[in-house]
Structures are given as C-alpha cells and as structure tokens.
Length: 109
Length: 109
DNA sequence: ATTGTAGTTCGTAAAACTACGAACAATAAT
DNA sequence: ATTATTGTTCGTAGTTTTACGAACTACAAT
Image 1 (tube, rainbow over the protein chains, first blue to last red):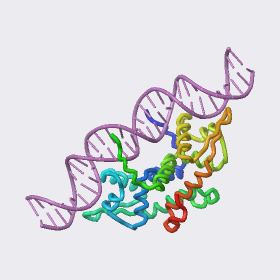
Image 2: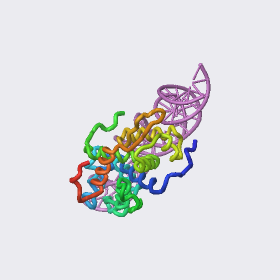
Image 3: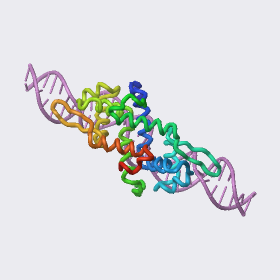
Image 4: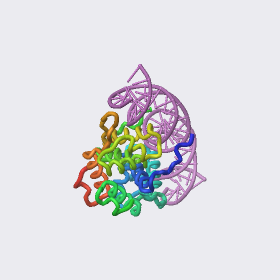
C-alpha cells in the first residue's frame, strides 16, 4: 500500500527534480519559452500558441505555477501570466550547477 | 480515444522536454549525479545509493537509458553504467540555451 | 550438477498525468 | 436583465509512472 517512506533524497535533488518534472512536457516548455520572450501575457495568448484544449492549457499553467516557475495574476477580465523571476533564476542555477562538473558547489541548488 | 495528433510542438521543445522528463524524479537525479562523479560503476553500486527496491532502480535506469542520458554495457557478471557524454553535452546545451535569454540561438537544442 | 552472484523482467496495484467537453464563475457591455 | 468574454473547475477516460516482491536469466565457481 504505502510506498517507500524513506526520504533519503537530498533537498537539492528533490528541488531539481521538481523543476525538471515541471519542464517535462513540450506544452510546458512552449509556454515557458513564450513567457520568457514576453514579460507578460494573458491566458488567451498562450492558448492560441498551443494545439490543445483550453482546459488542458489551464492544467499545464497550474502545474507550472505549483512548481513556482510562473505567476498568474487576475486582472479582470483577463489573467496575466509571467515568469516567476526569482524561481526562474533558482532553476537556472540548479540546472547549470548540475551540468557543470567544475562549478559543482559554487552555486548550491 | 486517440489523443491530439497535432505535432505542433517544435523539435527542440520536444527534445528538451524529453530530457527534463527523464530528470523529473529525485532517484534519477541522484543516479545522474552519482554517475557524473564516477566515470563508471555497476548496478549494485547505484542500487546501494538509493532507498528503493532494485526492480525500481532498474526501471529508473531504463528510463535514463531511453532518454539517452546514460549507457549500460554488460560485462558479466556485472552491468556497467556511465553517463552518455554526447547526449549529456546535448542536454546541457539544451538547458543552458533555454535559460539564457541572451544566448538564445547560439546553441541550438 | 549445484550453488552463488548480478541484474532484468513479470505481474500487480495505486497514483499521477494528459486530454477533452461541458458546466461554471466573474466581470464588462449592451 | 441579458449577453458576451475570459478562464477555471468538474467529470470522465485512457495512459503512464512508481513501486514492490517474485520469478527469471546468465555467467562463474564449486
């Protein structure tokens, strides 16, 4: 029933995996690329970019928000989405630190 | 029944998402970190590092192999695993290109 | 031939993911 | 009040992921 309880994974492993998982779908990559090129835009703009139903787009946006990579602010009648710059930088450092063997401990994830 | 057929996502989005997805679990991050610190090791060594059953470790290794991030070579009675350096570099460039707004097109994913 | 070692594959189960249309909320405009 | 616009949430369905123990394969050594 219960899966392994052991929480033996390190914090930075969990953190990096969380970012990576959020990026683990082409639609979400497309959303992030789009947002990072724009500063800000609304749901409809994002929806138009993607070949999937709006309900699904909304789900993907929610996942990116849960992972901390984007922010959504309600400005009736629209919802504005943008990159969460703090966590974006954090994620960037996570990945770069992960791939750079030399700069291993310089920037902790 | 059939999910959306539209393949509107771009190649580099699909490629990056594939790498990210493979990295989307703490166990797989741990494996990659371990391997990238070692040049090479066998299944048993990896298994010892992780708080999960060996069958599950084997699954995670298969996923990393499918994604191209690692290689496994049979050397009886062991199986040696190592980072796939070609694709590791490719992934690195994917992620760095993704996060670096300035260097957008310099290194294509 | 038997036993041991090293990993993979199989079968299974619960949970999470991806997708859609329909229904719903919340504001704006007629 | 009614209608239109903008997104979210609900209900549903099929697929994939994660996990485990047990069974299995393959080679080596006794």
